[in-house]
Amino acid sequence: MIKTGVLAVQGAFARHASALEACGADVRIVKYREDLEDLDALILPGGESTTMTRLFGFRIDYEDLYRFAQSRPVFGTCAGLILLGHGAHDPRVRQFSLLDADITRNAYGSQKESFVEDISLSFDPDTPFHAVFIRAPRIDRPGAELRILASSGGHPVLVESQLYLGATFHPELTEDRRIHRYFIQKIKEIKNGKKQSA
Ligand code: GLN
Image 1 (spheres, rainbow, N blue to C red):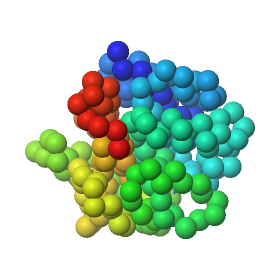
Image 2 (spheres, rainbow, N blue to C red):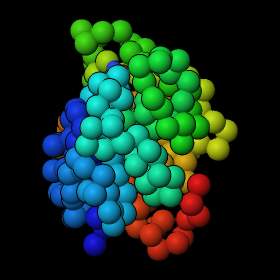
Image 3 (tube, rainbow, N blue to C red):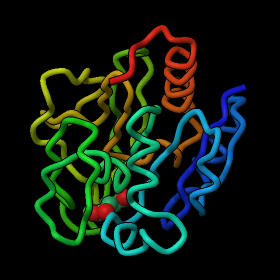
Image 4 (tube, rainbow, N blue to C red):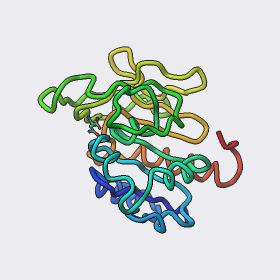
């Protein structure tokens, strides 16, 4: 069975855990560095990337997460995507720069400008996915090797590299489990050695 962690430093981790469980994954809430042991993969949830950065160093360090994420699949959603990427140009946010994408924080405005939009997933294009954008970041410059799995308004909103998956929205907030299932499939393929580590 695939063992997936959900980082619970701050933010929207509980719904990710239930989404993964609904897809048949074994889930562990990650609060301490020991919780990372023997996990196959990790979700960095949405929330607030400045707060998460501030809280690194209490129960879990930036370096613990960085070491883990260097060799295992990680799915970053919203604030989690900000941490996984680079280019936020905000000294309050310490990014991992593991997903090659320039990310602009709060690119659509404040909480009031949050919105829901139907997007089309490249791996299942015929059924729209109701994507919930909450103070969402924007992917401005995706690296050349990234695969774009969905876009909105001319910007990628769901991207992947060999090891990582990133969404600018909150896929855990709907009952549609296609994106979590996609991540689990990716973890299995990497675990079985079908994909090389990035
Ligand atoms: N605006 C938040 C940040 O900069 C992200 C919002 C979210 O995760 N929903 O971290």
